[in-house]
Length: 141
Image (cartoon, rainbow, N blue to C red; front, side):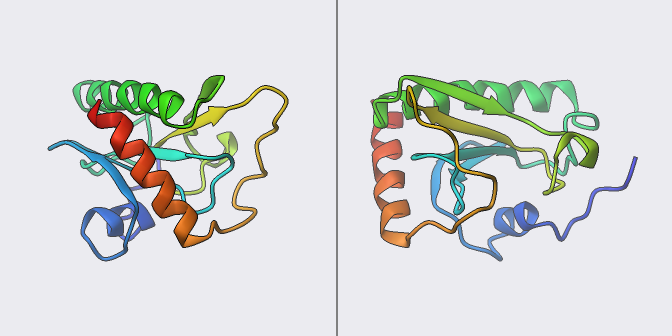
C-alpha cells in the first residue's frame, strides 16, 4: 500500500494550514462541510490520526470516526429536514478515493433529488456558512 501523504488537503486542514467550515470536533476527529457538496449539508468526518483509508486505520480510531459519523448523520437529517442519509467511504483509487486521508461523506438525501456529480461545483461561501450554522445547531440539541 502507498504511504500516507502528510501534505494531503485534509492533513493541511487538521494542521490549520487550510480553512474549513468546521461543524464538530473531538480530540480524535473533525467534521466539516465539503466545499464542493453533492447535496445540501454534505459533511465529512475524518480522524485526526494519519490514516490513508479504512485499510490502514487502527480499529479503535475507526470506531471513533464511526461514532462521530453517527452523530453528524443524525444532526444532518434534522438540520436539513432530510428524508434519509447516505454514507460513503472510498479506499484506494480503484474504489474512487481521491483524497488519501480516511474520510466518510455524510450526505443528506431527499426523495426524487439526485446527488450532484463529485467535485462538480464549488458552493457559495454564504451558503456554506448557513449550512454550517444549521448543522452546528442540530449537533447541540
